[in-house]
Length: 187
Image 1 (cartoon, rainbow, N blue to C red):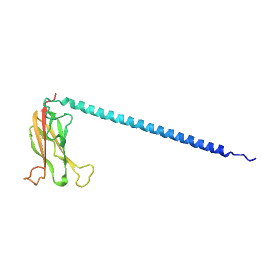
Image 2 (image 1 turned 90 degrees about the vertical axis):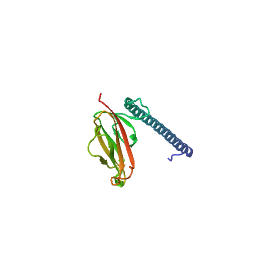
Image 3 (image 1 turned 120 degrees about the vertical axis):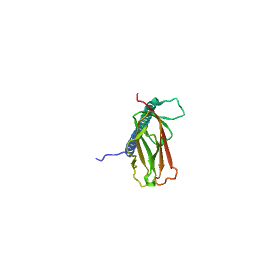
Image 4 (image 1 turned 120 degrees about the horizontal axis):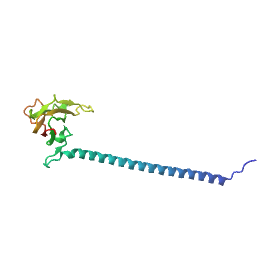
């Protein structure tokens, strides 16, 4: 009538069940780690490939601008936007090109960029300089002043900008930006 249950048989059955499920979980965790490792490797390789192709693209784009004068840094003609990093450099350009100069400016300090020296026969200003506010609009955050010019003459010309407060006439500029343009005719 009553089923007899052997205590030792029941214990061995439950202990082997827990052993089996533990082994399964360990294998599952090991497989998950393997998948994660493979994913990290693939992601790393992808980053390397993208970075290498970007460097290759940049190198190919700037390869056309080689010059005999190794001392003067040259800027690729495709880069017709200049900023603080281009200060003191010579840029190769073509007659009729338009370029921008974007310089950091903090309007809240009263300082602003202005054209100090410009050959008006070689460079024509396109409109008034514009102030571009920063994306994060915290009080006192610097923005950029943007100047646009069109190249009107072949040869070499310099553009000089000063960072000053307009009402302080007798003070030296806080910063000076100079870019030299080596202009050739269009091919």
